[in-house]
Figure (tube, rainbow, N blue to C red):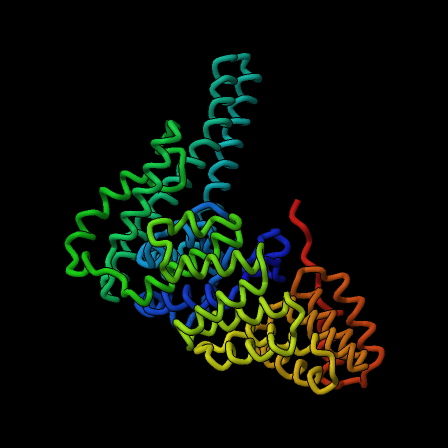
Length: 441
């Protein structure tokens, strides 16, 4: 189930992070061979999904951010793989570190130009020369503009480098660069339809037509240019698009998206999700059971079945569906185990609550920044009467959602009930000692 939340690393920037086991697994599958080709396999790169309708992706630190709008608009896996390859080019090339150096250089240039301008103004005033003073003003103003244009030019060159690196990675993995060209074509069409005239020297990216011209010959010369995505991968991509469409654009979004194939599995999946969110739960359960018959080993159909049963207030049946999802999940997502724990909590009996603690704790070992998981863990501990653990879990949840002051309060409450030096006490102390980042003005 798609969940939008702000994790600790993104709360300060108010980024609406999307958590979904199915989408995350698919995007990781797209990225894995690209990261290997780029030499990033062991770099600990996280891919973060952002709930935004625009077609965009970017990198920051060791994280790659991809908008759900890009995932939904891309008609093939290859288009998104091309986007990932481009962003991997930035990471492998160390472009962020170089950009910081260029920013510092640009600031220095602007300061020097400003000082020269001020000096010329002063000299003009001292000599009663209005021309010299005016020239000094021009230097002061023009120096900053010169530095800005230099920085933009540098960014455009890095974008071109990342494009070329992306083609190299795609070639190394036996994939086509056709998706990249299609993406740039989409940007060019959008620019043409907007009627906006853009100065190519005033933007940080090369113009789409220039990017196409630079890459088209290179892309078409590859023996892999006409390689298409496998039917299985395309089907997973279509189901992802259907899910995002319904969750972000409403009940009929998937039907519109797949109107040319209304009986396809992606369309059925979208219809089932829409029925779960907006329609009759009994009907939704029948529809998801039909999907499970088509693909009995699909963990995400079992997950959806669990979501439907939870909404129908049948937590024990939901727990069984989630248990099936966990068993079938090849990547062992923490998200599915947290859903199982949530259903076990709702079951209410002590045995189920203890199982919930185990499931959620194990999930958080794999997915430490999942703030929702800590809330459910706190609930389970609270119902079992284990108050110090409940308060520590609450502190963790606040910490990973960026509410640091609340995290410190609950950490102190938990620590007061714990034995000094035990693991929970030490973790509480870590939260208490955490220095809250200052907000940038």
